[in-house]
Length: 63
Image 1 (spheres, rainbow, N blue to C red):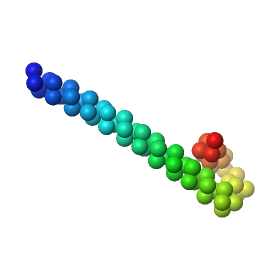
Image 2: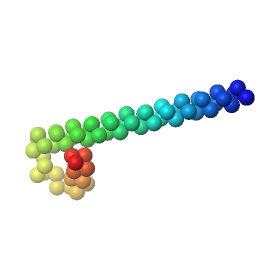
Image 3: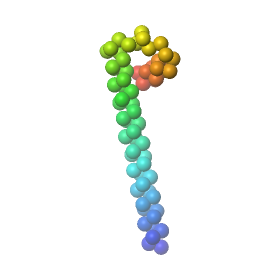
Image 4: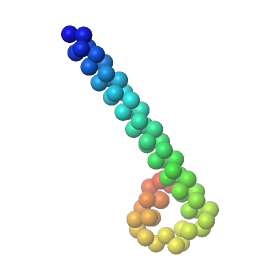
């Protein structure tokens, strides 16, 4: 019975850490996206970014 309790506690601990890892990853992604937007705007590459995928990426992060 003790092993079952340990495995449940370990699973809950792991799940909590996975969620925090996802939050950190999301924060990192949004921060790097914002930095990418600032870089694009300061460099004046907006006119050169005619690629739709790049425009979508920068537009989604610059909202």
